[in-house]
Length: 169
Image (tube, rainbow, N blue to C red; front, side, top):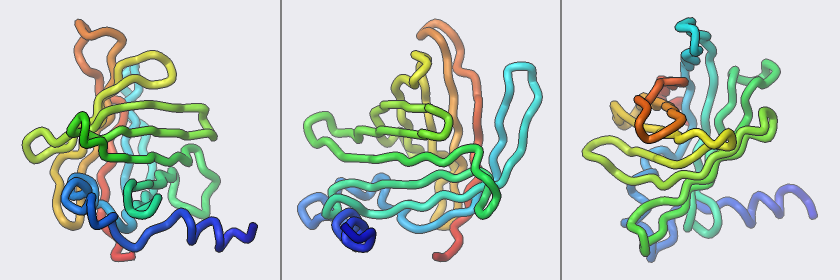
């Protein structure tokens, strides 16, 4: 099968008409973004990278898929992953499935609006509780915060932050 056939079958131009209203929570992300990333290490040091992310409609407009790439191409990747986001009317939230095969990093979460933010909570492939938040949401920028903890009784620890700016593409 030619790649163009695969991409044509996967990609969609818009959300499915019967799901249009439900898709608003993440639909504003459709497009391309540049980002600056901070990785907060356990010893208090911070690593910095640039990167990019891209969001698009998939599966006949019933889902949103993204790519997160760090550092920005064409440099060799240290993180290259994808998220599939699917709205589930039975729970009033989104199933979030993250996969970074380069680092064997996987997570399942449920995403919902909390005030002006989007909060995704679940578990990662190490068995840690994970909370990922989109904050400071604007038409052309957002702040993404990744947090983790080993148990409900532990405080959240910020591990990653992405400061994203829309590229116009």
